[in-house]
Image (cartoon, rainbow, N blue to C red; front, top):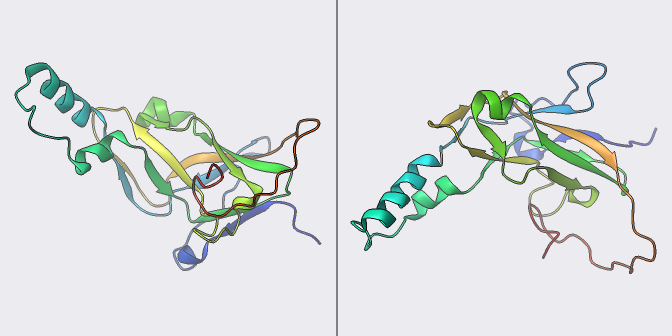
Length: 179
């Protein structure tokens, strides 16, 4: 039997007890993804407020925002330890869990993630699927290994009529198809 679509644990996490995504109910469209390790999603308010104070008061004009502070304004990648295989005319859509913004103040920075079929087993990261989160809550959010963080839905896609032939192949991992 030929494999159509599914999930595998990436090599780095083979011995880490990672669960492949599953659907929670018979009618569920999405496969629940879990965090592969503990991670902290810092609140971005700390740096935002500090920046506003600097700008308004001028008291710290000579102080640059540090690289450490900059990370509070960037999405945090939460590893899943999972890769997905699918047909070449399909993609895996990554979506937030409905309770994340309401209960944990976590939003997906990219709104919806798109995992292309050729991301599977790429040379940079083996096709490791990660979720990008921003925390708009007032305190840092701790995600524990095994916490459900998002969901993936396999979907077909259509191509435009008279599309020019695309000769390029994926050359890397996360964010590489736009290179």
